[in-house]
Image (cartoon, rainbow, N blue to C red):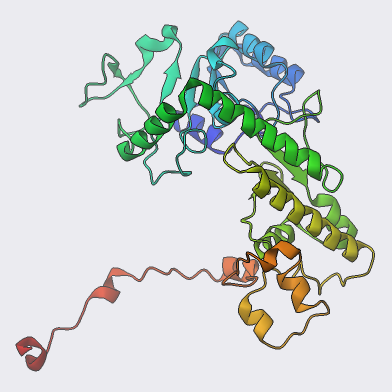
Length: 371
C-alpha cells in the first residue's frame, strides 16, 4: 500500500488478515517505482495484492500506473484500485485497461451521494472475469452464483439500498456525455484553482506537465515558520468569508486539500480564490509586522455577531474581522460559534448522550397518577 493511501486501505487489508507493506512515494507524490519493485520481489512468494488509488490521494495521475500494475502482476499479485477518486476518471479512462483487477466505485462525490450516505456502505465492486469464481458468497443469502464457501469479511451482504436510486437517477440524467463532461470540469476546476493560488500558496504535488488531477494540495507549513500562522488559522478564517474549510492536514499534515468537483460554478470558485488570496495578504501583514502575531484576524477567527457587538479588545477593526472583502456586504454568513479551545476539549471530553439511568423517571404519586 503506498504511503499516500487513505487509512481505510491498510485497515481493510488488516481486517482480511493480511500483512501490510508500505511503499514509498517520491517527491512528486507518485509511487516510488524502485521501492515497489524491491518490495514486490522481496514478498513475491506471499504477495496478494497492491491497493492503489488512482489518481493518487496526493492529487496527481500516476505517470507509471501501467508499469506499477505490471510489476505486481509479474510477482504473482493482483491490483486493487480504490475508486475514491473516480471523479477524475469517469468517461475518460477504464481502470481495467491500465491494469486493475478489482475496483470499488465510491458513490459519494462522483455519483452524487453525501460522504458516508448514512451507512452501511454500498456500491459496485468490479472485478476482472478471472476473479468471478472467487467472489465472496454468504452462508444464508444467495449471492447470484458466488461461492458460499468464500466468506466475505463483512457480515452483511448488503448496504444501504436507499442510496442507490439517487446515483442511478444521476447517471441516467447525465448520460454518457454528461458524465464525461463532469470529469473534465472537475479536473479543469482543480487546475484553475491551483493556477490562481500558485503564487500565493505552494501547490505541493503536480504531474510532469505541472498539472493536478481533480484536487490540489496547498502547503500552509511555510507560514507557521515565518509568522506562526497554521492551517487551522486559515481554515477558521475561511468561515468568516462564508466557506467551510477544505480537507485539513490530510494526506499531508499542515496542508489544505482543495477538491472543487464539477458542481461549483465559476463565480463561486472565483469567490473562494479571492478569499484565499485575501487571507494570504493577511498572512503577509503578520509576516511584515503590520499585524500582531497573536492579535490578528486569523488567530481569532471566526468572528460571531456577539464578538462584534461586545467590547472589542483587538488591534484590528470590526470591519476587517467581519467584512474582509466587499462582496460580504451583500451576502454574509455569520458563524454561530467563535474559536474553540481544541486542546481543552480533547482533554475534557463530555459525552452529550446521558446514560440510560437518566431516562428512568420516579414512580408517579397518587395525584399524578390520577391526572
